[in-house]
Image (tube, rainbow, N blue to C red):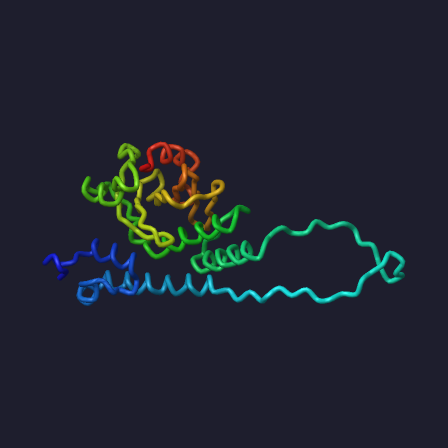
Amino acid sequence: MIASGKIMNCDNYREAIAADPSESFEGGAAHAAVCESCSAYRAELQALDLTIARALAIDVPELTIPDLPPIGEEDGNVVNLPFRRVSKITTPAWIGIAASFALAAVIGVQFAGNGPSNDQLLAAAVLAHLDHEPWALQITNVAVTEEQFARAVNPGIGTMDRNIGLISFARSCIINGRIIPHLVLQGEHGPVTLLLMPDEMVSAPVTLLGENVNGVIMPVGDGSIAIVGVREERIEELKQRVVDSVEWSI
């Protein structure tokens, strides 16, 4: 029971544990002690946090350039090599890309593209989040209630046209420390995940590829939207409809 006198339900608990995986919030431990499903969810979330921390903790040695003797044109030991373009990947970008691929390898999915490291890290965070919430991907013809939808897509984030299709899951989740709407739309071939991220910009569309998964993170204004479905889902036809249905709050 929490301070308001209400017993914490599963929706309240999962929203709170996503924001605070340490479970320091009131009523959390008591709820998890009697709810096997939420206890398993907590274990998965805490394991995921540990995986992300390990993947990002990449030890990069300090770059050192050895002292070389000056070389003159008259030096007979000098060999002229063909010109080769030097890679422009900086050390911070390399760290981001390496960490992202480490995360993608853990969950069996990779993302395509050569965008900035921030794009790659966001893709990794999206894929990792989907991996620890597979129970959201239920095939059903039952839509969420207006109240559930409004709690997830609240005025502080923006608006979304409900006519986009049957929304079977709507909850607030955490991506990169920010609370965002996590929705599931029933697609032609199965559930399609939509993550509305008004504060997460990408420089260009980021493709997400997997053996049984395909998707994209689309730039939308100052934010982005992740759209991820099964391999057979026609994401190309869906993405513009989704983007057009969303308007961020100013």
